[in-house]
Image (tube, rainbow, N blue to C red):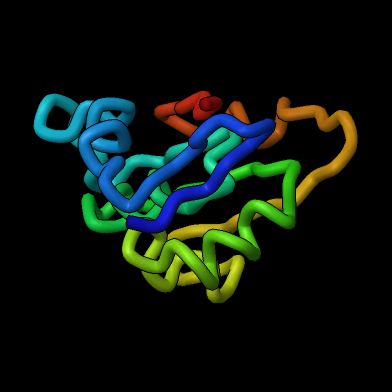
Length: 117
């Protein structure tokens, strides 16, 4: 089983689908045709699973480019092709390494998920 570690602690493993589904409340929340903002989520797993729910658009904001690159190569079973390109027909990944202001984005979204392990 592949996994990532952050500060010597397992951060994500291929077996973590249940964790991702719990964060998104799969089955309890209807994401169809909604605007979603993910803060964090650099492993791509949450974005990958949300895309299956037919949202109108998902914006993911991540600060760690290295995490996204490592997961794209080594944890494809969790992120699929989501991190191959940072912009798709119904999603966009924004990489920020500085303090950001969210007023324009937050006025457009219906659901905000703060994803921090």
